[in-house]
Image 1 (spheres, rainbow, N blue to C red):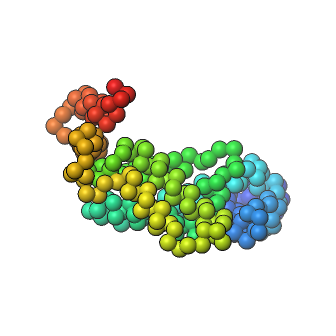
Image 2: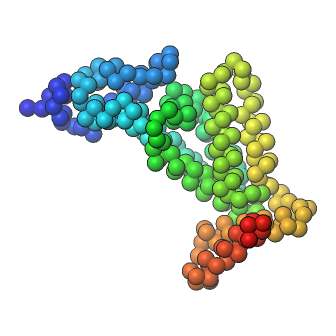
Image 3: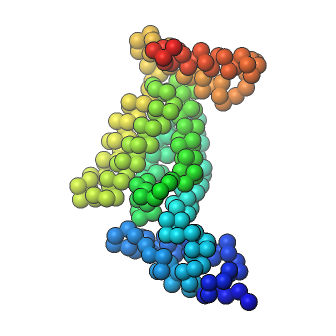
Length: 244
């Protein structure tokens, strides 16, 4: 007969795994040094340590699974945000939601975004793709100054950086307006909400190429697959003429 308090395989493994992740997160939030022991996790759910090792391999496996679980929750929040006709407003809301998630899950966020684990779970890459999707909508209305990948890297790095500063050094970074100032400065470097009608000709050309590229990626047009692929190559050249 299987018994969860022995080293044998327990029934309801999936449920037990979720309970262990929940216990690990609770203990992490309560920990003064942002660490958690496998023994404490097992005691919290009433199992022996061999059960944890069977489910997660070791402590790193447990923490990796906890980080992946955190990213799944984060992604769920992002996917539930309203999509409006104003992609820049949606981008701004996404920045603010990122900060709200962190303030509601302080220890978990620090583990997710300043990992000491051997590898970051694949789920982490999905937040970058979600951000790029919103930026492509910005590009489609002519509001993006720089290529989508560069904008996504800049915005995510700044958002994570200011958020970790608030969490790790709250006394030094105590100004509640700091996240908004950083957001507005970064957005000003990446976005052009006025479509920059007075910009130099080569900048307008690159912006128009980005806009058309984003629109082609969002919907099919009269061109065939081969023609569309070739046009995307040309549009990329217009955005980066020095690499041609």
